[in-house]
Length: 450
Image (tube, rainbow, N blue to C red; front, side, top):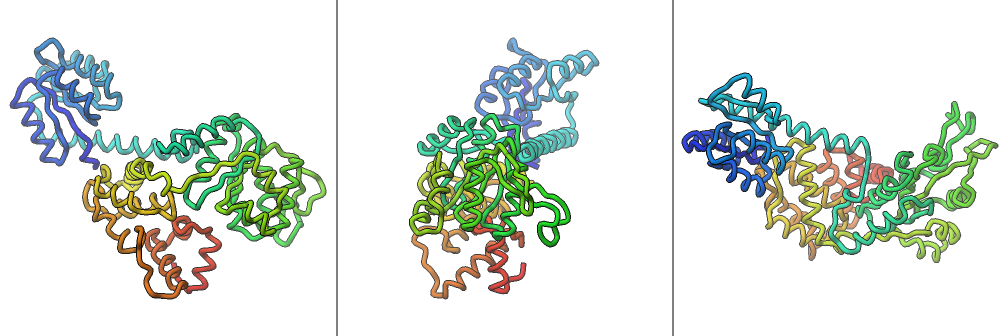
């Protein structure tokens, strides 16, 4: 149970007020007390109380019902429980009608209060988890989902608003873990294609043959195992957006095929002789410098200019350090709720440690680090000791490389990532900044079981 959620007790009887506050504090909750409605409102303006116990009859011009209504005006999510010494059907109906979640009768039973608080907070926890789950399922990304106060990122968000409803191709450049897919989703879901499909294709994760069938689909009998017609990702994205991640890794043949789709908005399924027309917006992403790839002859120049109609360059996390505290607090709240861990926040000393890191894996690495700290945390607040392994593992600046072969360093990094992710190859590959197929190859090469 999330016992760090604060509770307010409002009662003009000092003995009653302090007794209830003491009972709740014994249960581990943070509790404030107020002798009247006016003081209660002052406290509610400063603190987001999860539960407020309010006495029905109080002198001074503001009774319990009025106090409850004003608290709800300030804190809509607060659960208010009315306390009354004169329980009647009329008082109960009035209290519930005006927004009370429960009412209890004096003299109060400590065990009854403990059970009531636990039940209400359990419900609040479930509601919070459900809200996170609904957001994940709906995939309704908006500008507010990119957490930043960095001027460069603010410029990027302004640009996404300007281009959201255009069909122009977008090229997003940035290091692994900077949030290229998130920005692509913001562009899609902020424009007039928001109710249409958003299809993601990882170009680095598949061989040329598999990627070709993934993109364009195939007809029955096109190759061994093609037992029926299958639509490709371009066809599935019709009317919406296709996000081509790591576009710099596609083969010369697929570069030519993709160029034709961008020029004509038409293609053939593998083994087919009938053209398929689509209305698809293409957003591509890469961690490579495609212009250098063009100069080296590894990427088609005409395709580069077709993709690079609108370019967005995402800064690495080390260039937007002011966002680290914001992102850290966001990850603490979200991950602790998902894992069912009672973690309220992150200390100033821990934040200084995180700010000192150069974060080669960028935002994705920060998220993984916060998750590990929450899993191993023994207190209700992440503190410096929860991140002590960062320094010992060589993640901080000025770290010393052990005197071992490069292959051994890579093997150790893979083993450590798998341990952190409990053997989950997908999550480990994301933490390492490589695709799953590459990780599988390395697992086989280094004979690492998972």
